[in-house]
Picture 1: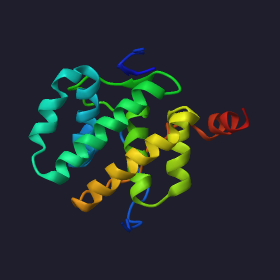
Picture 2: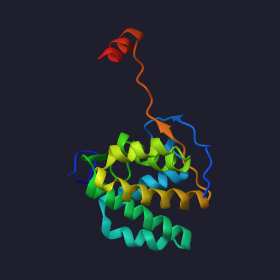
Picture 3: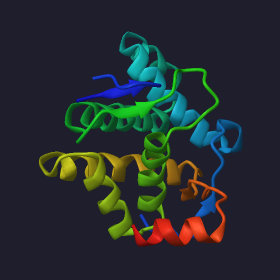
Length: 171
């Protein structure tokens, strides 16, 4: 169950999204990606403040985004296959799990159905996959309709010499 704050704690969307190299800094994310990452960390760190976040969303589309975010976060928290690693609220680093969650939304927006489903299946148990997919669909469509398109991101590869890479490829 659940997330970890820096440690283990127990519609026709277009295909604009292309994988982009990702550094491990929140400063390299788009505005909406930083906002989503902050919302996730806020929800995990202090759920009692979530109604306040929801109220500040204002217009109907924003409220729908907040409601679908909360539903997706709840499903992730209750049905994650393992402890998900998140950084603290104001940390500028991005964990691989946080990046994966952003990519679930991005792949769904770009209609990369198999990629989105495989990420969802990697994150949650089979019993929760359908529910999370529905919640992500609502979130991705709402963000798209509001003009926010997320990029599919990749972790940068480590700079290793060719012989080390060849050895790692074999094992």
